[in-house]
Structure formats: C-alpha cells, structure tokens
Image (cartoon, rainbow, N blue to C red; front, side, top):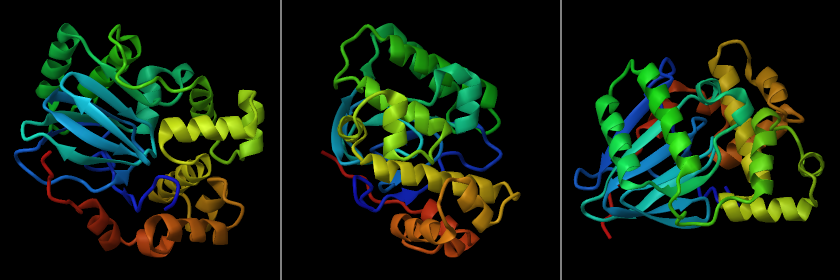
Length: 281
C-alpha cells in the first residue's frame, strides 16, 4: 500500500478475540520479529534496555532504554533493527476497552514518544513483568494501560521527537468515531485548510490521511464481520465504503487478496503467524 503502508500485514495484537488486554515481551537475543504490520488495537512499547530503530509508516524512529512509544489503531510499524541487548514490553488493549479504561472523553490513543524518569520506568517495568504473556489478566492490563498513558502524557522529561501537531490529534479524534469522513469534512471539523490537515497528518503519522482513513474502514469491516452480525456487503456499507466494489478494491490493495479470501481461516492464520529473523545493529 502506498503512503507509508509498505505492504504491512494485518496481525492482531491480542492472542484471541476473547482477550481485551495483553503484554508481550521481546528480546533481541531470542530472535524472531513481526514484519511490518498493523492492527485495530492501540499499542505501547516500553524499552527496558538496549536501543532500536522502529519504522512508523514512512518514518524511522530511534528509541532507547526508558522510552515509551504509542501506536494508534491502524498505525503500521516494524522493528527495523535492535541492539544485541534490546528488551522491550509491548502492551496492547482492544480499542473499545481502551476507550472504556481511559474514558470516552479522552478519545483514541495518540502518537507518543517520551522518555520516562527512573522512578516511572522502574514502576512500569515491575507492573509489566507481573502480567507479561499471561492470559486472563484484563483488569491488571487495564490498570497498566491507564498508568502508562498517564505517564506518557505527563512525562516531565524532554520528548525525543516533536509532539504531534494539534491538527493531527483533532483529526485522529474525528476519525476515531467517523472514519467515513472525507478530507473536506474533516477539515471543517478541525477548523483548518485541507492541505494543512494532510501535511501535518503525514508528518506525524508517516502515512497519508487517505491511506489511513481507508485502513480504519477496513478494520471496521473486519470487526463487523468477525462479530457474526454482518455479511461482507453489509459490513462494507456500515464501515463507510460507497460500494462493495470500492471495499473490494481497497481490500485487494491493502491485503493483496479479496475479502472472501481474507476471511478464510487458513489465510488469516498464515498472516498472523508470519515472522522474520531479528536484525542486530
């Protein structure tokens, strides 16, 4: 997919659809990493030790010990390279559960890159270690999720990268509830010229607004079909696609297959289990 996707795979963050929160651990010494991917669940990465280069759309971000990264729903990302001692926790929750935990007025998770101080980092590591790789820990995961969001937003340390522009934040808030909005409608909602909205969005997210909006619609189609209450045509309409043929073309462009093929269990499992070798810097 153009505009920052770079052939990203759809790979659910949560181990299964019954999970609402989960913490994974990643160690460079063990090997095996996900390819460039995206998912409907917002995600936090806490770097415990070492350093890494992370691709976020068409941007490359350098992270090191004590830093916290946040990926909004649908944001493609990939670990490009890591130091031999790299160790991090990846924390994710169901998007609806995130809204429940954080409060509806907070809106969706925003891009974030901050450095935690020593006390904050120690507490975050301890909490993450208590629930890592453990199913059935949604309440503890929710507590960790809320705490990490609070730390990230209130960190007194200097951010390693510039904060997202207010227009990007407003745009993400609008898309979080209405992914069907076009550029003109979004621009009216956030109170800025369309070119300005697009420019800052691409700068902060590493992908074009058009591409990101399409991806959110696809994620909604997947959610609706998986619920068992919608067939493909009804899900495409409910997600904001003008026609099923438009949904089909977007599916083909993003996933490299037709919607009917994507919803084949074997195809999705193959996508989900795709891993690549680790790369040391």
